[in-house]
Length: 359
Image (cartoon, rainbow, N blue to C red; front, top):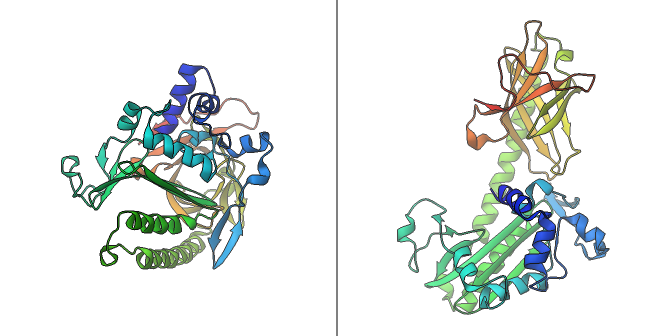
């Protein structure tokens, strides 16, 4: 929905979101080293200030690239420095400088829902141990003190900030590896306890629990990858329709084009040309129509499994592919991509499937 808000801002203001952001927020706050998207940093000739992004896999750190994500610009893609970020925290703390007025601060930090769902919003307060969500930030209490936090995580970087509004105290933590996110969380928790004089025996030590979770996640990832490899090996050569019938380019208005091609005896989608690059291996399940798609990104996070279906005409030619891009909408909610003819004309619409989403 932040992406939707971005579109609304651009439509109503007649400006790009970047221009709107600079004019109305960054410049009034004096945030001169803050930009939207990595490309803006290069345009400002400040690329030498970039921290090299890394991801961690197989007990090693691997360099990765700065991600240009225009489709998610309302929900991230801010390039900044700790000193610039502190200017925002100062404005939030004192809310005496446009555009962070007291009414803006109050509305932004007003709790809207409880995140874990174990208690109601009415029960949330100074004695609560739950975490609530406001507008782009989380609200929690420790020692009855109100805490405002916001986290950032993308391939190559992890960050967090907190503000104790009653004490006018805040801090920013940043790291140039996605695993730095866990470290920043622990540093933040420790600093808050220090400021609030939390007795040592009452402090929450999340380091051991986080390490156990990360170890378990790594083991599950390896197990899942091995299981998926076995599945794909068993599914090989089970199609009764020629693989060539599946090859080609397919189009959806929201998710744009994908091209199915052969790779190592399987059907394969190479989508590494976009801002959030990925590839997908297709595994036949049944009836020449039902498939599993295994999505891999360049951050070493493993494979995500999605439902994939093909529409075949009476000659067993593939006219469309439906992909469960958004699993939270339901396991059977598919976004249909229609075949684009070799003449680069309009997409061919399947006779009994809509071009957009369908169940």
